[in-house]
Amino acid sequence: MRVTVFGASGAVGRLVVQQLLDDGHEVTALVRTPGKLTLGHSCLTVITGQLSDCDAVERVVSGADAVISALGPSLKRSTTGSQVTDGTRTIVQVMEKQQVTRFIGLATPSLADPHDKPHWKHKVLPVMAGLMFPNALAELKGMTEAVTRSDLDYTIARITNPTDKPATGRIRSGFLGHDKVGSAMSRADIAAFLVSQLTDPRYRRAMPAISN
Image 1: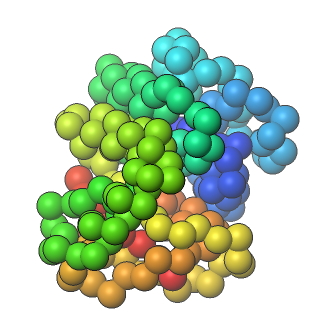
Image 2: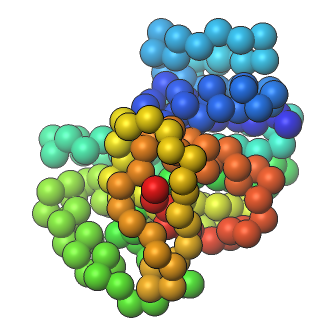
Image 3: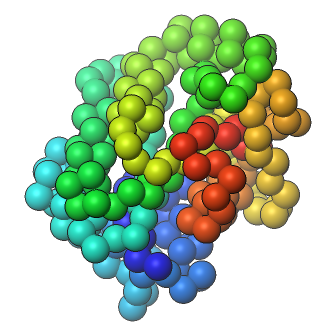
């Protein structure tokens, strides 16, 4: 499968790229700083560009079977603006233009899915995030709405506490109030879940919460 990856030089994104290559996929990645993506592989194409560059986004999306976005906002309180939201809107517009329908991305349980039942995370996490990371929360809302309000065939995995622990292979997924999903999850297992959604139809046009 030909897969385009955004956020490929980030902590989760690098693991997504490696997992895709290990599974035999062809990968095209858009990165702002190529030196941060140190992987080398005959099935990996790295294109330098910004999310704000529509032509660059078109180059990496063209011919893809699916897009995986490991993009996320900065957690620095000094960060302002809507770069990630605007970039995600560009990705969605280009995907619709190129007729690439499958989108897999990340968000947070601060944002509810219609399948959820009332849960403490819906009350506590938005308040905490709004106080500690107000711009990041606004960005997460914006980038998620850009996808969910589109006609794309999306799966957005909601994560709470990513860690750098080794992969466990134990992944819980589901909807708050229905399924036993915790908070902590290794980034390696997050990457594995995102890649698994290329062929798993369970969460089409849904936002499952995931954890170890």
